[in-house]
Length: 374
Image (tube, rainbow, N blue to C red):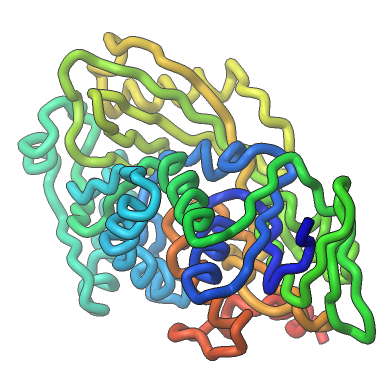
């Protein structure tokens, strides 16, 4: 059995899949290792919003990265469908970032000015204008930031589609294989040790989401990351209650195919506990009801939770290990893991190949916080 590869990707979520897919398309022999089942953690739990403008509020490096990644989805959707037969459910019907208080109105109009200044579409709608677009929204909605270019995908399908497409290009995927340590010689990675033995490579990419730091700490690189639990639920209706995604500080409501709505998400930091709580779901229900009163007549479908990786400064880690040559890191995407997957795949593939990425990755370098302290 072959146990030597050009690159080993640790993590079977959306970013691990995107990285493996990009490397394989470029001709590399790739092994992807997942300690559980693929798409079983945050990537499978996400609502799939591509909220480059709704989520991010200033023209910083993460905003620029998010916009570039958002623009990659139409082409990626076609590639995945051709390679795997999977439809990732890309929908571009826009997003409404709704205001429920006077402070929201002031804040969102300021954001609109910033985004328009950097060439993005964004406009303010009054409450009456919002309800012309979405008649089922409540009168508590005072207005909204209308963002035509923010869309959504089906997160589980995107993740599985990337992994199946990677496999179509030759990637070997092994589930239920946990990486226990990384072997190195003279400061260079040589292999990974797992519960199924040793796999050899001089290029190892750690993309294990909230669990990445457990392995990275064993390489002498403890990152300032922490897990954040998000609980969600979904309902179905006979007639669609929404056409656009509704985004607010309170919660979000994402209309899916089949008159299904995903509602999320709670924010509970510093826990790996994936239990869905009555407290969390009841809070979401009340917030959703305030925004979309008709949801109380919807039929319950299910509830779930995902653990997202957050960083101390809110930026993901995308780059090379500062001490061990051949180790690369892609983690800390928090609520933007789905959105940033296409650009993450390209960036890490470029770095593995020794190329300069097309975007400035300096703000996301792995040692940025430790450098600030020295």
